[in-house]
Amino acid sequence: MLEEISKSIIVALEKRVNFIKKLELEGTDSLRLFHGINEGYPGIAIDKYGDQIIIQTFRRAIETEEIEEIKRIIKSFFKIDLFFSYRHREKGKSHLLYLDKENVNREFNCSEMGLSYEVLDFKQGLDPLLFLDLRSGRRYLSKICKGKTVLNLFSYTCSAGVLAAANGAKFTINVDFSKTWLEYGKLNAKKNNISSDKIRFIEEDFFPVIRQFSGLEVKGRGARKKYTKLNKQKFDIIFMDPPTFAKSNFGAVDIINDYQSLFKPAILSLEDNGEIICTNHTSSVEMDTWIDTLKRCAIKAGKPIKDIDIIEPDEDFPSPDNKHPLKILSVKF
Ligand SMILES: C[S@@+](CC[C@H](N)C(=O)[O-])C[C@H]1O[C@@H](n2cnc3c(N)ncnc32)[C@H](O)[C@@H]1O
Image (cartoon, rainbow, N blue to C red):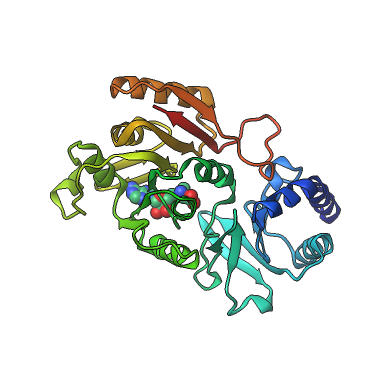
């Protein structure tokens, strides 16, 4: 077992030599080093965030001996000081099972495209605060956002919003119903000297926000309760990265059965010639089926799609059958 896992990790690292150089040139020090499921050893992923190496397992927890071997391989590959942690995920829970003692009380930073981001908070046992697989979507956004107004929906720690603001967007609005994630978003904005007139954070459910921006009526049980009141507003670019499923008083985010309820109000909140960069994380929806759904939805909303481009995840998330579970599209209207 140990030999098998070591071999797979060594092959994965060797494959990434040129890619790591490319990332360094764009100011990125964070990537997936080993994407177990498609690199010969399912159930394990290893990520590098700056000088942090985060090992995660999803099936069986690994032994101390295996952790030590993984550390040895990665240290000898990078030849710099690195700090390791290991967590095992089981039944929706994440257990921190190993932490280099040097990691305690350190600041956790990483860089992507020249910007600095918070990485993770071991004490709270949180997920990494930057999702690496969406890097290619963020890179695309950074190239088209200059002078544009950007709405970042399901913003999490606001990496896309911060990136757009830093790359000359007129302003960005970041929406997430989690106070914790938006606090990290504010920290990320501060770290990168984004002035407050360039970035705004709305702690609110997606549905009342997008429905008010689009001029649609707010629905659901939540409509009778207090929610952030907003005026109708249009944006040049909407970046939308919804979770697979989340239920609230305002409705259900359900990207398998009802992407339309997310996409339609987004379309109606777009300026003419606007663009939506959107994701679908589930492998149970094929790319073609998803694109069809979006096309039909746009026609129904009275704003047919002019063009769609697929944005492939970067090569640190290999997918041998070319069917990455994370699908990213740029949809032009
Ligand atoms: C897949 S993550 C988004 C990742 C993020 N876009 C990024 O670039 O890293 C999903 C986010 O959606 C938020 N969320 C889920 N349901 C929501 C809802 N109904 N309204 C607002 N935010 C929601 C969660 O708090 C979480 O931060």
